[in-house]
Image 1 (cartoon, rainbow, N blue to C red):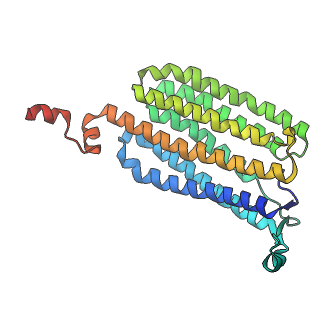
Image 2: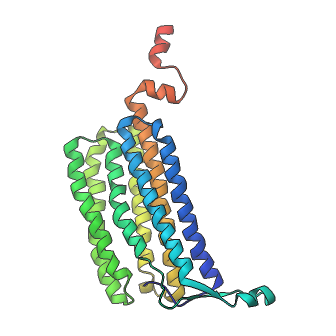
Image 3: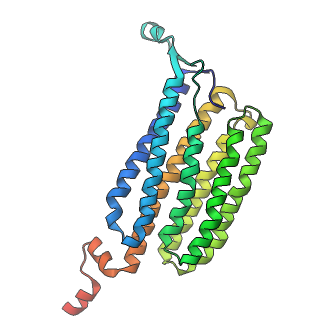
Length: 281
C-alpha cells in the first residue's frame, strides 16, 4: 500500500511531523551513543557501536522516507487557505507514489543488529553467543521478509496470510529471548538482570505496535486513516525500539562496567577507589 490519493491538511501534517520526529530522534541518539562510548569498558563498546549504527541506518532511511513523502504529495487549494482560511488538501502526484519500502529495507538491516546488541552487551561465552545469534539473526530476517509482500498488497486476505507467516519467526524470537537467553541471565549482576528483563519487555511492547499498524485495514480502518495510523505507529515504534533500546543498552553497559572494574567505577562517579580508602584508614 504505497499511499492514498488524498490527505487532509491535518493528516498530511501528522505524518510529516511523525517522520520528522523519528528522524531527529535517530540522529540525536546516534550522536549521544558516540559521545558516551568511552564511559564504558572497551569490552562493551561494541554493543554501543552497533546501537549507534542502528540509529544512523534508521536516520538515513527516515530521511529517504521524508523526501519520498514530501515529493509524493502536493498541496491544492493553498491559495484559498491564505485568503479565506481554507486548509489545503494534499494530493498524491501521478506516477510518483510514496515509497514505504524504505522501512522494510531499514528493518532488514536494523532488526538483526538490535538483537545482536542484546547478546553483545552481556559479554557471554563465545559458544553461547554464537548459538543465540545463529537462531536470532535468521529469524529476524524471515520475520521482515515475510511481512513485506503483505505490506504492499491492497488485498486484506493477502495481508492477513503474509502477516500470519511473519508472526511465526516473531514468536520464535520471543521464545529465544525469554527461554534460552534467560538461562544466561543467572550469571549477570542483579540490576543487569532487571534491566535485561525491561529490555525484553520493551521489545515485546514496541514490536507489538508493528502488527497492529500492519493490520489496520483488517480492523476496518482503511483509506487515509489507515495510511496515517500506519505511518505514525511505525515511526513511534521505531523511536522506542531503536532510540530507547539503545539508551537501555548503554545503561546495561555502564552497570556491567562498574561491576567488572571498581577502579573504573570510582573514576566515573568521581569517588576514590575502595582500596585507597582502606589504605588511608
